Length: 226
Image (cartoon, rainbow, N blue to C red):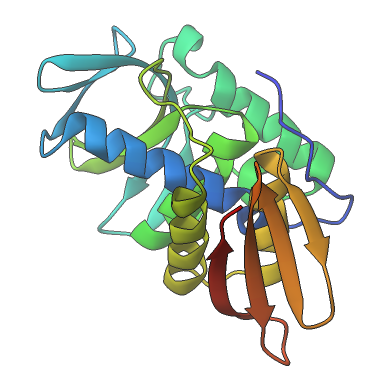
């Protein structure tokens, strides 16, 4: 399990990492949603799969949330549970990364978190470790989070998708707008240029111009087609 270190800087905390990596995770989640439709996920821990109706995907167990106590637990801390070792390799890699990068949320076995914070944690993880997607599954009174591998989930170079995702991402989550825009651009291999009052992202022959507020937050997003 290797970390996609393209955007990582020495003092990045979880908020920095989420700002940089989260938009790509959002794009992948939207693709997964289109694939599975309204089907509810069913988790089979022993087989290491999650099912959505007739579709099933191999998984890695990341951790679980106790929604009654708002407590997050990592799958690597499983001596009392006994998760299959093959399905917690990524969770172990997350712990190692958290220790090396000094991100306590990745290396502490249990800590307080609500459902939104658990999703933020797993969006960050799924992009850091180049997973195709993740999902949350109600299982035994807990909410289990797993990452998914699937050839069906393919990111696109559609400029409209990029514009819509970055717009949704900065509106739905509290993130650093510039880090989010630059991170999403660079992780997708797009040319990114920053100016004092605007940014330009080149997608193929087309461009996205993003104007900024005085506080360097995203103000407008405009597509210019070649």
